Image 1 (tube, rainbow, N blue to C red):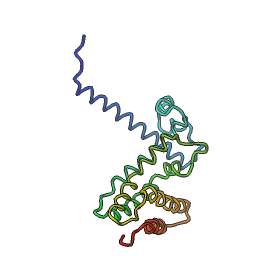
Image 2 (image 1 turned 120 degrees about the horizontal axis):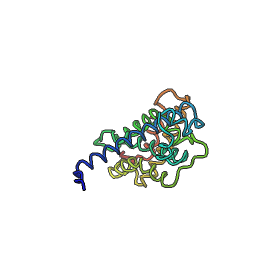
Image 3 (image 1 turned 180 degrees about the vertical axis):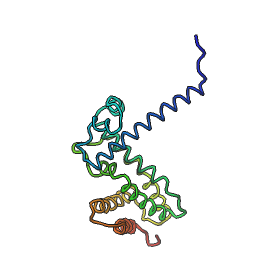
Image 4 (image 1 turned 90 degrees about the vertical axis):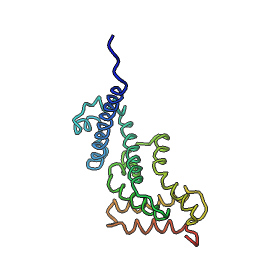
Length: 208
């Protein structure tokens, strides 16, 4: 009977395997997102993604299960990327300033990840409907807005209300401006800044 490998080596091997898996998964999702942006949803076939990724089709089926599974993975990856970008925004001493900075980061994320964004918010894949679990996880990825809005309310900047009410209004304003900008109707960030600032202002207290 051989001597079992030290747990430290087993752990290192497991981490290496996981790292390789995560890298391949990210590559496949990025390829799919790029195809969605450049060639439309009809390009999202397992065979096409496998060819573009130089990866066996069976690996894609193993990771995602089906085309629908791939679409849901893209949907969740998009929100996860938004979450990571938002969390890199430096904290501000004033929560209202922090909220404004998060809005800028949100726009930057949307414009930097057009393929993911189109699937997250524009139904880029006809017939794809995220599961309830995916919707819950997606909304949780943006909970930083709810937390910072709650801080703004506690600091007396915003009127006492449910943070989600403010967050949803801000989200709607941001999405409207972004949709127009992505469609080429707006040439810069000025309208985005105007509508998001106006939305926040509508909840300001007199002393905000």
